[in-house]
Length: 316
Image 1 (cartoon, rainbow, N blue to C red):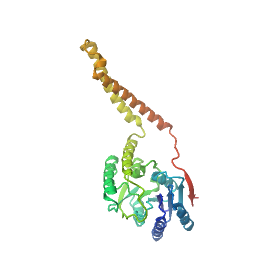
Image 2 (cartoon, rainbow, N blue to C red):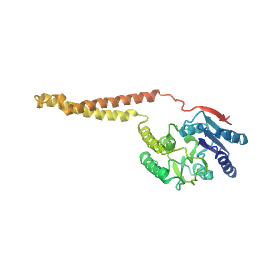
Image 3 (cartoon, rainbow, N blue to C red):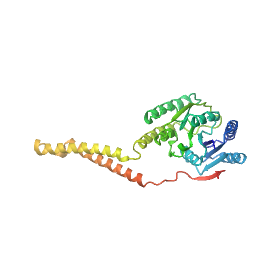
Image 4 (cartoon, rainbow, N blue to C red):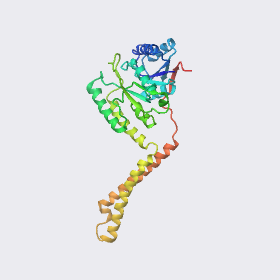
C-alpha cells in the first residue's frame, strides 16, 4: 500500500463527505493504493454514521470510534497502530488542510529520503491575535528548546515513513511535538513544505487559547523526557549532590567556627547559616529520593491503556 491517510476528528459531520471525495480523487488521479483511517474521538454528532456510510461505499475507508473524547494524541496513536501504507499522511478533518498536497508530500518521503515532512501554513486564514501571534511565539519556543528547525509545529498536515510512526509513542498532548519525538527516536531527516491553508468552511474550531498554555507545559515535559527520561537520576542526583554539598559546606564552617574560631559566640541555632545548611541538605536528600523513585518507576512501569475503542470499521 502506498499511502495511509490518518484523520482524527471531533464533531466534523459537515466536512467528512467532501473531504473523503477530495482525497479519493487525488489518490485515483495519481494511481496510489491507499487507505483512509478516520478516528472519531468521541463525536456527539453524526460523524460516525457518515464514516460508516462512506465505508460501505468505499472499502478504502476505515474507521475507529472511541467511547468518549480522549484527545488528538490518542486518536493519532490509534490510527498509527492500524496504518499500513509505506507513507502515512496526517491531516485534520475540517478542510483547512489541502489533500492536493499529498502527492508532493509522498514524493518527498519516497524519493527525497525524508523520514518526516511537516507542513508549514505560511499564509494563514486564522485570527491574528487569537491564533497567529500565539502560534509564532509557540513555534519559536519549540525550535529553541527542541533543536528541530520547523516553522510550524502545529500544522496537522504531515507525512511520515511507516517505520517512523511505528517507533514513536504519541501520548498525552504530544501530537504537537511528533517531529521532536521522531528526532529523539533517531529519525533525523526532517523536512518542511509550505502548504496551502484554507479558511474553515464548516463549524467552529475545537481548540482555544488554552492549547498554547498546554503546549508550553508539554514543551517543558518533552524537553525533560528527551534529556533525562531514561535516566532521571542524572538530573535529580546532580541537583541533590549540589544542594547537599552546599549544606555540608555550611555545616563544616559552623562547626569549625564554633569549636575553634569563636567558641564563645552565638549559638549555632541562632545563626542564619544553620538554617541554610539544614534546608539545603534536606532539599538535596529529597532530590536524591526523587531520582531513586524515578528510576524505580521507569523500571517497573507497565503500558497503561490510554483510550478505549467502541467500534472499528473495515479492519481485517
